[in-house]
Image 1: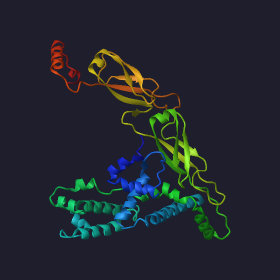
Image 2: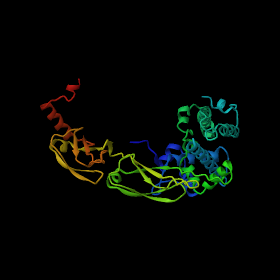
Image 3: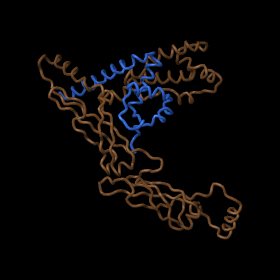
Image 4: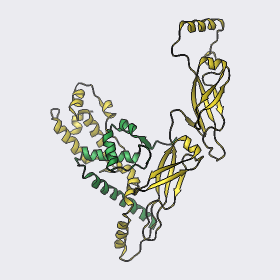
Length: 92
Length: 298
């Protein structure tokens, strides 16, 4: 069996000591967009993003209004980095 | 571990001072601000453990009394996964951003390479993972996933699909630049683990408890399979570990020919509570028919 990729929300609460209200808030506000549309299962990318949001709120003191802006900027940087790498590979 | 030393505070520091010190250090060493910096990651982990030991009044009191040690803290602290690990080489959320923003890239390169010069580049392929039940692998199913960009995609899973198969959806990946075609989307199939059914190649194993009477005298019993329950004949004289095979109730074979089998492993279960009648009967029978099941192993 391959490495587990998807987790039930109840498993995530137990494994990462997160509270369910916070997880559902992340989904409601579309800070995370689970690829699984039928069940309440999240993958490792969703979990990493939730933990980043938690750190932004608890360590960095970011308020809820600023979370989507920061996430957007982070995604933009990752996208540019990935795209540049892809571009460099295609011209060399 | 001395959490006070790690956080750089005195033993008399107030709760607020501890929190402030933790936040300052965590901000500086957060792995998403220091991607691929192992030293910062380790420092962040140590800071997190230290804070979980003395970060709240309750935890601090327990730590001072010696009731909360590093082992307990290790179980509670934040150790990952970290976001950059999944996005550095183009994760789902990075791809999500991509939709509708390709123009930025085109503008950027047009400026970079000279005005009016056409930049053509194919879009990136996107990979999604989908977990499915063993039953769906055998019978086929239709599922839906959310693509980067928010569109929903219906995924038809063909009957008999193998684990690790990648279903291709043409031009459903990232958009291309200029005349470049969009990339493709791939959905990789992963089988969900099941507590009842264990996989062994294309065979499926399941443990079924039987009573002493069923083991000794045999019987027909109902056994679950991924296709539903079937009747199985337990032959007289079955024992714990006896394996019975139900043909073609396993998973599709790798070579595409038919299905594996379901292996039923029997486990003799004594009654949860026994009475004196049972105990005396067994004792009498054992005295009359002594045998040593460990004879060969000693």
